[in-house]
Length: 110
Length: 276
Image (cartoon, rainbow over all chains, first blue to last red; front, side, top):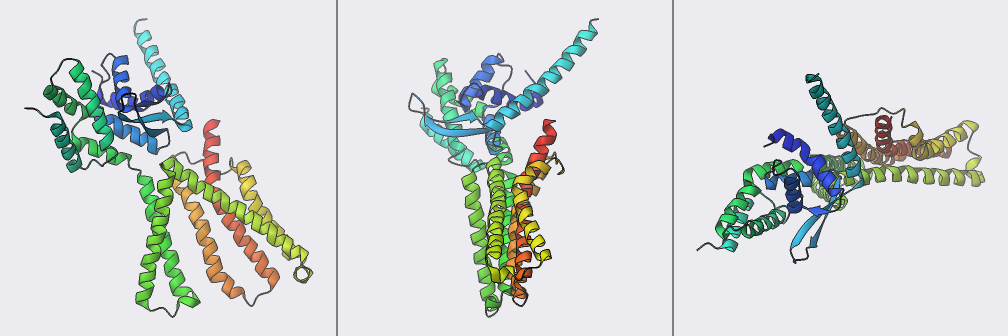
């Protein structure tokens, strides 16, 4: 299981990157993150919504209510321009952390 | 016998009691809960078990409430309070200083003051609601700022042209007056077009919270300045000559225009600094 600090820190970049593929709603976002991490990135489901609302307040994403094929009401979220910029920044920073970590790990075996 | 709908209704009650707001986010959470229950049942659990697991997945209401509170824009609240105070100050000044208002009794003044503040407060509130998000509010207020500059420029050009065209007025102007008049008009125009260029010279405030707070404060300051000018300075100018009045008025507009454009300039400066 991944530590909760890391789960919290990775929520925003993950949501942004997921929404970059197209609009989605809360439940689907959680399911996809779980599936992609083999269930290791496990959010308390309800915690996703405050994060989404915060991101909407900050103008990173926008939302709309719509009905699904099965007639169920859903709130769909999609990326805004500022969200794309924020995502690029996240990717840059996470890559940097990753490359430093990978570099150090490599040196241990030399 | 377990009743799913009853249990969900009970869960809703608990959420409401804890302070989760309806329709959003409670509606959204309920939709989530139902989808999760459905999935659990497809995996083979019975209704009751599926409900229990799904409820625990969604999380405890008191923890969720804390998280949702964080997402309710604190900045928006600050702007609202700021606007209300500004409104109250403006109205109290009008009531106590304006010649027409002197005949009002103190009680009436207080009533007017309260009524005025409420109006200002609701006006801003509606504007904020329309804007939707914090970023939207910032954009809206910046638009207001830029429209000051455009208004000031247009009015300055109009007034200057009027003075030039009317021989009786233009004859009263000395060379110095004309320089003052044109300089003021130029400053107003410059604050729309020119701030883009000088934004590199403005300080790049990297903390976006501080930057937007300052940026947001500028347009109301501009309005306050103009209001103060119209209420306090113009009545004292009745005796003074037309050339002085015109030059002073244009400079007052120029100051408003600069204040209006400042929020935009600060934002650009920060963008420029982070881009390089």
